[in-house]
Length: 185
Image (cartoon, rainbow, N blue to C red):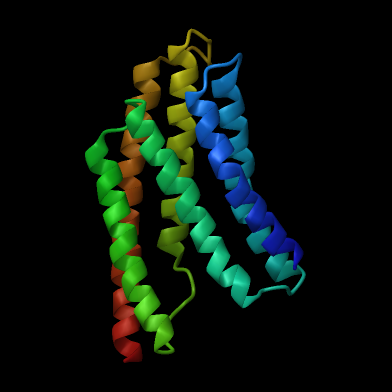
């Protein structure tokens, strides 16, 4: 087992704790949820960096890394819908985009096509991460804590706008995937 794959497995392991700490009421549970999410989302950059730096890119890592990202993003987005931070429709659009693009990428890779990540999709993930972080900060403010004097609704609005941007970046990335896949076949 390589170091990058261990980091990816840790990210997968952290997902349920990030969700549970949002819903189970104990002192500073939202703060802990935010810290867990920050660690988990940062590990996405770290595992990729380590894999390239240590020359430890593996087929297991190529499979696990996007799965860990999807688990983290989708489950946290849905959790924030349940907590009324995000509207259901934008999260459903993001999930639908993931399902459509991943279906075509799986088809392409099984036929020797494109499997590398596209720059727009990396930005999509970044915007989702920032939106989730802002959504969680909004929950912290809503519980009565002070966060830079920003209101709950301001955090929600900015996060919501970032999710819309993430969706459009995902569409651009998906369109680029389809263009490259079409050339490969």
